[in-house]
Length: 321
Length: 278
Image: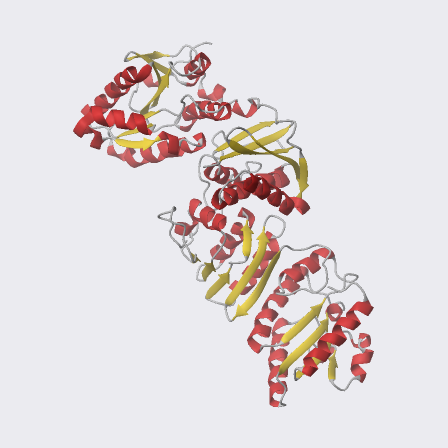
């Protein structure tokens, strides 16, 4: 891959600096993150750290009294659905951009144990970060990758999605970085085929209610609690309604379970034409499109959207808790 | 919902006889030439409302509501316990109103009927009214007899005064008639309570209708009581509790795990729709 020059080299505080930092084990994790945090503290910068709770405890111990100057959030919670992470960064940056100080954050959305589907959507998230902040405001985000536990292919993709790579505290431009404009290809990324046992059910306007009953039945059988089942059914209804509106008035639905999630797939013949961040930003009240997908992201643990001129597939995942 | 004249005659006779037994004044509305038997029955007042109240013109809701009030008052003065009416809605066919107009008439008639404590049966013949019209009329009556070709999936009716109720499920298929019913009652009051405990599902399409009514009636206070959990959650997730302060959502038992979900909501300006953006 050819390297695309990163804009941040000349104006470090006015552009988005998106770093991948590779570490092996807890000691290296602390080394790479603590130096980043301490640099920020020295400049009195607002800092948000989104990692898992165990790492939050580690960092707090090391930072001592300074930990109170850092905002911590549990990535396992805010990043359960990776599509909800960018809005959290938007919120953080919005809160502080008027302060005039540089802003920095640490976000570790990818960890061992993420399912293949979650990993793919986390990688979509990493690419979309470059789109989300392409026009500013400027800030620095460090994304740690644990090379001890993650597959080498995950690090390879991190080199494509991050314009800056940090090894042992030293940053340099990634030769493999795909510029944001070229990287938004995720709508064409393949999905694993549904299991053969997941039978398709066709639907149209007259059978929308039947589809909800089908989803609700599967949710009950999967052991979802009432709230999760209601949310999953609502989300499925909205995605199916999108098929009615944009997919020639009909679609096909399949439901199945994998090891830990109930999955609902809606397929139609429409071709999704939306902005890359569709489904991540809450649409304003006057906008009647885009809200179904946004709500699905709020109500489900994972939403996968794929679209080509041949049709659109949306998969909703919800996990029994 | 009537499939055959024989069936209608049987239902009408039974309904009117029941009213007479209960001491109610019984009326039969319909096209003049379709009520030969009733016109011969001294216990039944058979009237073609188009001729009797509308001077042969199209339906005028206010004239009809005034007529109901007058007839009920007269019945009570005459010692009846109230009014019972079976209307063959074929009386409308000479100058048929549009579906939306008819639905608005029916919605507000329900309010008048509830206020008067009357019993009114509106009979729609499947051979004279299309399935979509019958479905929408069924949706704005609290009770249905007969099987509509297309089940509307939702019911909207008056409980008392400005208290209304909705039951069933609102989705993309029936949101529009639901919105029409809501808009009809919203034009006539400053406070509207909508009981939604029996509303099992409200899709975004239905929420859109609530938004539309709230935005077009900024001085209306709309209180939605006990909606389903997913409607409540989506309302707050979309920030509507902040943006539409004239809509208040009251829940009997607020979920303890959702702090900070305020109960009211406002509006922004209508803007462009992004096509195909889902």
